[in-house]
Image (cartoon, rainbow, N blue to C red):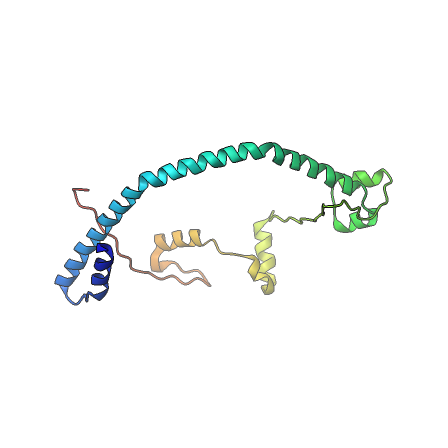
Length: 187
């Protein structure tokens, strides 16, 4: 209740002069101190809950491990079985590798075999192996620009280092003020 009253008092407060700014600064320090007290009060319960959650999750993972391993093995066997029975033309079109080609060499000619209760899904993967070539390709085809995301963490680091001297085409740099409280010698 006291925290809500204090929050309402702060909301109604008008900062109009240096004396009010000094009072606001003291309130800011008091807010930080109260927040630390609340966090400290809840910390033991949160730590106990975290430890209990971790123990339960560890036990669950131990109980699930044999099933997960069995699923991994049976999925690999089902995938190999299906790949071995795929139509050679379909396998070549889909760009399948390894097991599919080996299975087709055995002379199997079934098309898309089915297993009740199981479906097969193709998961196509991609990786950038030459970043400079990739960037050149995107630059040459503006419709592909959505394939490139800027590294905002690295750009922010450059902005902190160079401030308003950072001049990169297509990048806006600005400064936002934030309030931080200094802890006194008693903290």
